[in-house]
Structures are given as C-alpha cells and as structure tokens.
Length: 347
Length: 162
Image 1 (tube, helix red, strand yellow):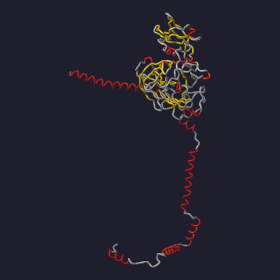
Image 2 (tube, each protein chain N blue to C red; image 1 turned 60 degrees about the vertical axis):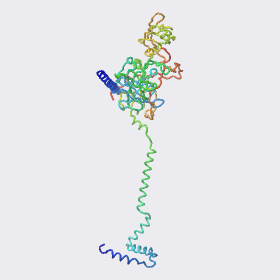
Image 3 (cartoon, chains in turn purple, brown; image 1 turned 30 degrees about the horizontal axis):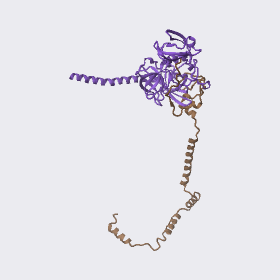
Image 4 (cartoon, helix red, strand yellow; image 1 turned 45 degrees about the vertical axis):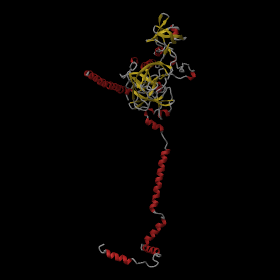
C-alpha cells in the first residue's frame, strides 16, 4: 500500500514538473522563431485614396523583394518600408487581387525568410506570426492551425485558406505565418471573428511570384468548364462538368458536359470545391493533363489553359457579375523589373 | 546710566511733570518749523541754490523715474516683436517634412528611374509608376494611419469554374 502511494506521489510530481517543462520548451521555440525571423519582417507605410495606411510585409529574397497584403501594397502609393530603424522607398512589383497579395521591392540587400510547406500543416499545428500592430514595434503572436477553408464570408476563396486561431491585430495585414522551424507557411490576410484569422498558403503566393518571374505578371489560367456536384460519386469524385463554354480550351480539347473530373494536373478532385485549388494553380499558356470519367471510360485530355477572367482586367461583383468596361479597374498591376538599374549594394 | 540712579530719575520726572509750553506754542509750531527750514536752506552757497533751481525747472520730474520709462517701453517693444515673429512667421512645411522623412524628398520624376541607393537617397517611384503623386503626399504623413487587417477578402471566387 505504501509502495503504491509512493508511486502515485512520484508520478504526480513528475507530471507536475513536465507541464511547465513543455511550456518552457514551447516558449523557447517561439522566442527562437521570433529572434530569427523578426529581422526580415518590416513595417510598411503608404498612402492611398483613403489616406495613410500601415501594414506588415516580409522579405522573401535577399534582394529586397517582399510580400504583403493587397490591401497594404496593392493600391497604395508613396510606399516606404521601415527596416532596421530606417525608412526605404519601395515600389510595387505586382499586385494580384485574386490571391489578395502584393509584391514590393526595396533596393537593398535584405534578410529573407525561408519558404515552408503549408501542406505539412495539420489541425492544431502551432504557428507564429510577427507583425506590426498599430504603431507598436514588431510583435509575435502564437496560435495554431484551426482549419483549411475554401468557403467563408458567404463566398469562395480562390484557393484553400488557412484558418488560424491566434489573436490578429490591426496593422498585421501581410504578416508572415511561420511554423516553428521559422519557415513561412502563409500570409496573414483577413481577420475572422475574435482571435482568429485567415492566411493565404505560401504555395499560392509562390505561384503568383513564379508567374511574375516567368511573365512579368500573374497569369491565372482556366479552361472554361463549369462544375457542379454530381448526384452520385464516380471513382471517388462528385465533381461533374455542368457545361463547357464555347471557344474555350475545354471545348477545343474535347471535354463534354457530364464528364466527371477526377484529376487536374497533380490535384486529385473529390468534390466541386477541389476545383478551386486546381484552378488557382493553373497558369495561362501551360498545358495541363485533365483526367475525367465519361461513362465507364477514363479519359485524359491535355489542355492548354487560357487566360482566366480575373487576369483580363474584367471587373466583377462578388456574385460573379461582370461590370461594364467603364467601371473597369486594373485588377493586376505590373511594373516590370528594370534590369538596367545600378548594381545592388547594402545600405 | 551710572551717572543717574533711580531716585534722581524719579526726581527729574516729578519736576518736569508740571512744565507747560508757552501759550500759542502749538499754533506757531508749523510756522516756526518752516522758518527754521528756510534758515537752513539759506546757509547753502548761492551757486548751489541756482543749480538746484535750474534743475528743478528743466527736469520737473524725478530723474530716476524718467530713466525707467525708456526701459519699460523697450521691453514692451521687444516682447511684441517676439510674439509677432512667432505668430506671423512664414512656415516651410516641405522643408520640415523632408527633414523628418528624407527618403521622400525628391519628386518621383527624378532620373534615373530607380537605383539601389542608401536609405537617405531620394529616389521614390520610377517614371513608369501607374499612379501620380502629389508633392504634399510625398512630404507629409500626418494623422493616424489606417492599420490594415481586412475583415473580408478583397475578392471572391465565383462558381466552380476552371
């Protein structure tokens, strides 16, 4: 009996010691991430038609290229970046309304955050963000992945977004979402209720950056098919093509209404919402294999993606209605790199 | 005090107790005072009396009072000048703001278009910028900025089109 009591007491004391130990370890990891990554996170100030604005951004390469939210750098001018206590003028490289991000360029040698992999994130994976809330200094926030959503606020995101349970604050739009290795896995874009927010997966931002590097602008692709939910599952998919638009790559490739979509590129399709992810990563001009079930026959089409309406400067209302040309906005703004600029040097 | 003891003092006071001035003494007291004052004055040399009279004629006021007036007037004028300078001084907002934010001084059209310069350099956007900037916007950031974190997405996807 005494031995049992002694064992229980020892176990209790051990568990009591372990809880603070793990908390301390976690705190140490967060501190480590903050210490390593904060230097690549910058405060962005600019002005737009509504007045002055302030947000956050972060460097992704050593030549001063940085990501931020579209709301921060997408339509602003007189952009300055505060880095190491000094303010540098920045210019807009690219702004993409569909993904909600913008890329800026500061002419200096900069630290850069390593790019991570958001596919490795799971529910309850701990994450850290570093931003500039209000007029305060760089501030870490700690939270966890709460979900992977495609639909919210009564509409659909262009691709899967990371729902993160951490307390975002005003001014942190464009802040990096980091895993505990200090790698960027997302970009903080929207707040959601209390102590929760949405981040664009870093792969989506990198797709846009890849387009910019290749073509000097984002090139969202599409093939011209409209998908609905099938009544029955076929080969694990419920995404059936409802109609194929005329004079589109889908029509020219031979796809027909009623085809059940199984795979687009490397993305397997199980339900209509999967189309969003697959569609977002299409690049206009690229050839993508599309596998469908037509009756009992599995067919694969090689389709060259066309230019998505979002890249054609066609303004749309949230319900998809196209606005007249007179109300046109420039959705994707691009200022090509000037390759004849002077060689870089550190400040 | 050693020469008088208490008895002698008492005796003296008792003796003086009944002494009275001559009749009319108090009525003539003022007249007698002025007469003695004039006598004292007439003992001064004639030249000094003349100088005093001349001075009193030329400077009817007190000399020290007269010297205090210019000092007071000067002080008032100096204060007025300082206040007016502060109120009506022409402001130079562009210069002041430029000192606060040196990176935004030069207009956007300055060539070359953009260079990899130090933070104190004055290149802003290149000439191909899609937006025009006003000078005031370049030199001023006033008031509280809008701290950005959207509550709704900047764009929605329509239907499941791809």
